[in-house]
Length: 259
Image (tube, rainbow, N blue to C red):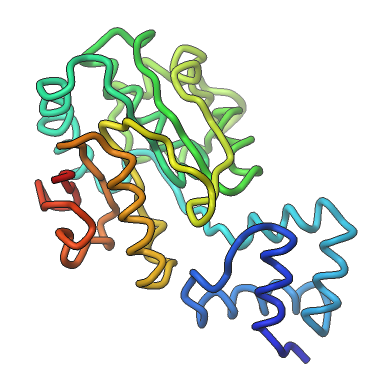
């Protein structure tokens, strides 16, 4: 019988430093209960004991918590706006040495896309992206840079031709020159210090899983991380209600400027 979810949340925080109270409870509890049931485990305490003793099981749990749905060039109209308007704005405002943070980067699709796009404006060896995620497993996959062709289906062909090579039947590996531009780090948006002096932060399709209270805290921290007039780029279902409360103004749809 799965009960006492409050105690379970406390136990998870002690073990992983992931604060489940900051996530929407109904959908997160449903995901966790489903995972535990598949393991034929009957109580939260029993599951905590199991993941405390089994490192692989613990990593599986963290990976399961952090919902990783990612693909290159997701919502292409937003990426076109990024290339045609946002990057020229950033270069005109801050010069060529811009600092971009891809937060909750999952398997690396977004930071690698940013690198390929920036290489149209400046030499690729001058591009530097910080990319972070809470999940060590997806960071390891990101650093390998191998993707199924389904992940690339929306990516313009020019990028696939220039920066990928086919490995195996349906897999592609991204080039070393792109990989060198991205520094991957493990990072928890709810507790770890944020990078500073950013000109742009890209954080898409993760805020939908947080409570309204957690969102407010994160948006404020994003604002503190950005330089004045820096840009926050969010997902297509994550428009910020009352952005001024967090120190932002709406610049374009899904793009917010630090005031």
